[in-house]
Image (tube, rainbow, N blue to C red; front, side, top):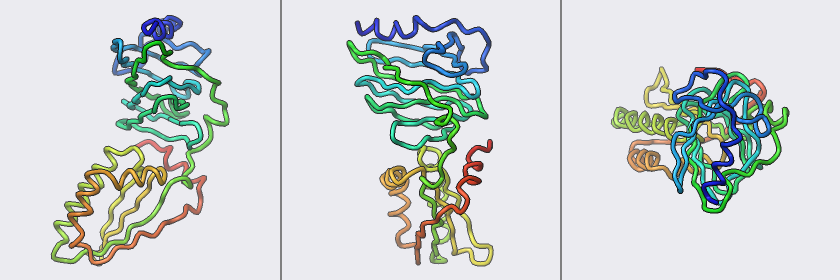
Length: 259
């Protein structure tokens, strides 16, 4: 039964009819019953406990709302830009290198953006006597085209003054934590450090977090705690004023631009 549940899922897939520019071969095309647009799928490995699958979402394509009964799924973006959304939460924009974990039984969907293909790999638990995925309704046009909402994000400019004798050492700490945070944390949208041209001890950091939850998770990371503890004696003053976006619609366009 446990094998049949996920073998049945892939028995309804169709052979791929076109060559997709993917890292891994695009062997199958997902059925339109559960997907919108063209989605290429390749099962890379599977066992009684776990399955690894590669998805190539052509521009504007996505799956339906679904969940994985009692199973955890990890999604990794290999190329392009993708959307991911969990029920009751804002839609997220993901880029190459982003990793998202869908908890068991959490309803969600994912796919490419309207302006970019996206290749994603998933690693999913296989639970005995459970379906791999329970398919729900399709994504509406309104859900898919709704812009990312910056006002759900935390935006602020950190105002930091550093003691002159510690400036060089502080900058090393700051550059490391900024780089690791952006690289490793999907919820850290931006950490943009700046130094005053008139007074080098005056540091400003534009900080944008996807949500309050993402910010709280950031505070628990080892790289942030290393920075905080290592620079306490270096910082003369620190202010963390929260900011509000004046034009949320235009701000949304910033996050749609390709690098």
